Length: 285
Image 1: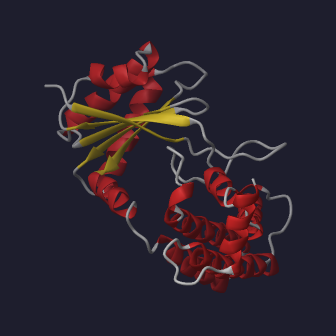
Image 2: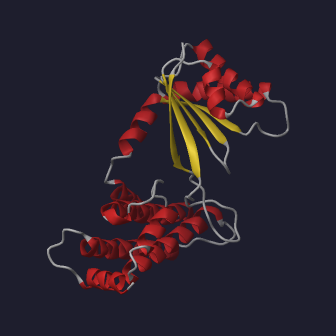
């Protein structure tokens, strides 16, 4: 029996930073995501992956591990695109312990099957179905930015360099998610068919053609660079003072973004100086 596959474009989450390996922010290169619901054959997945022979062996190993365990996937997700490894995730209706054991058996099976020094270029994994359901709910969770803000504060209070680094990352994520929500309210800027990753967000804010919009884009870039430093640069100490300063920059970003959002709201009763300047600038063109 063949499962039902659904394909749709997404944004490739890949960083862009001049002069350094790409790591943290999304770019505008699309990837293809295909989902299968229920039972399926290996050929269904291989076709979604482009028909590569080595990847086909990986797919068969995954399905064999699941079949031996009597845990066939309730949902299967294939993600592929330029500049990244393709990924294949089997979501099964089991707890984390069971899925972890199955995933370990899968990785061992892949190690036995793929004897080349080079990896197969396909990441295969087994995940709990509850994780898939949680991801789907998170797409409509408007409290994400506030959750990351609280997490940034909590990590800073715990102390220790690793918590300080993670606090800076959460500060950036809080700002990024809040900017994403605000950009969605600027209807006439909603012209991108891609997800609202940071580069797209920066582009949309700058398209507002106001000092405030460009300043917000600059602030978001600053927080992003600090998050990259926290995640990847371990040659120097990431101090508590640095993490505290990132929290302060995050707070100021949220405050400025809130003023920007109110001033840019199309149904605002009183046109602000910001909006009048934008209209005047467009009228001169």
